[in-house]
Image (cartoon, rainbow, N blue to C red):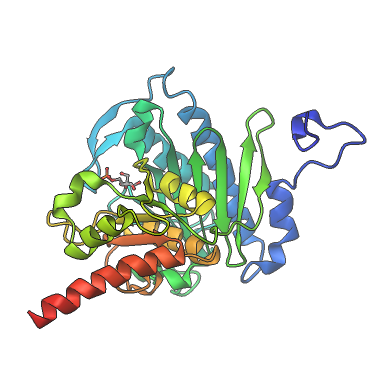
Length: 353
Ligand code: P6P
C-alpha cells in the first residue's frame, strides 16, 4: 500500500502530495500581478470543475445525458451536460467577483460581469469551453473543460469590451483544462511550467500528481479524424502517409478520442501530435482559436512542444471574432515541424505550377 496515497496516511508516512490549494499559495508570487485575484480565479475553476465532475460521473444514472433539444451558437446540438457545465462555470465565476467578463463556447456573446458594487473592478477575463467533446458523454468516454485567462486591456472600472477577449494567445496569463476521464485531473500553467492535479473524489481534494509536465523527447502517436481524409489538404495527406510508412521509427500509432483535452493529454504524457486541419468542408478548420487552441497551445509550449495553424505559431494569430476557427497542429515540437514541412512543400509545388 503506497504511502503516496493520501487516503492511507499514517503518522509516520511521508506527507501527502501537495494539494492544489497549497500549490497556488506557495507559487502565488510567480503569478503575474500577484494580487491574489488570479489565485482566487483558479480556485473558482477548481470548485466548478468538482461540481461538473460530480454530474459527469453520474451521467448514466440521472437525467442529464442526451441532447438538450437546443442548437448552440456553433450550430452544434447541445447536450444537457453542456448546458449544466456552462451555467456552473458562469455562476461560479460571476458570484465570486473575480472576473470582469466571461466568453463561453455555449454563448454567442461575451458576458459582462460588473461585480456587487457595479464597479467592474476585476482585472481578468476568462474564455471557456465548459464541456469539450460532450458527444462522448453518452458513450462514457472522456470529456474536458478548457479555459484561457487574460488580463483586461480596457480601463478597470468600465464594462469589459470585445477587445479584452480578442487578444493573441501569447498574452494569456494562465490556461488549462480539466479532463474528466478514468480520473479527473486539472492541468494548468501560469507561464512557469505545466502541473497536473488529480482529484481524490473521496476527499474532494486535488493533489499534485504530475509535477512539471513535459513532452517526452520523441513522439510516435498521431491523432486525427481520418474519416475526413479525403477532405484534408494535400500536405496533411502526405504527412499521414509519412506516419504510416515502414521506415525508421515508423509506422506510428494512431489514436483518436474525439475530445481535444483527452487527445492532447495523451500526447503530453506519451508523446505525439494532434491534428485538426482545415478541410474542403471547413476551410478554416473546426477548433475554436480562443477557448480551445490558444489555451492548449500555451500548455504545449510551456511543456516544450509546439502549436501551429500549419504555417504560423497559433499564439501569434490575431483574433478577429470570438468564435473564430483555425486549423490546429499541436504536440511534440519535431512532429509539428514535420507536418509544417509537408504543408510548406505542397504550397511551393502549387506556387510553381
Ligand atoms: P470531430 C469536440 O466536439 C471537438 O471540439 C474537440 O474536442 C475534438 O477534438 C473535435 O471537436 C472532434 O471533432 O469532427 O472529429 O468529431
